[in-house]
Length: 142
Image (cartoon, rainbow, N blue to C red; front, side, top):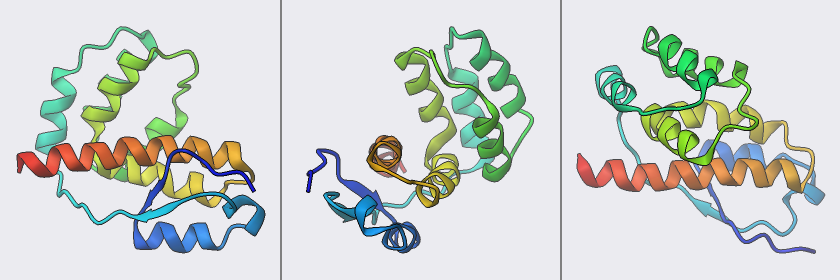
């Protein structure tokens, strides 16, 4: 058994998905309940999108597409279709902040359900930690 450093901040629905994964994939992960919530709006998200200072050409194109969408599901689909390899961390941080926790949840769910090994879960754990941090930040502002 190997213990992972990053806890999995899972909602009740995500916990159900995680517990349906093979025991070998679940083994060693600390699961914590995500209880923070934030109700985002298209207006808030668009304001954050307009404030982004991105450098990566892929993300600049993505930013323009996202501005035309108002539904987190559609934005999540655009995010899934965008190649994030080789994108600088500061651009990713700007992007995830602008998109907000609702959009991150839309991409976390399918990734968690498709996890086949610790590497897959570790990738999801990073997104969960980002979402958890955003929820803490956004909740304190509302």
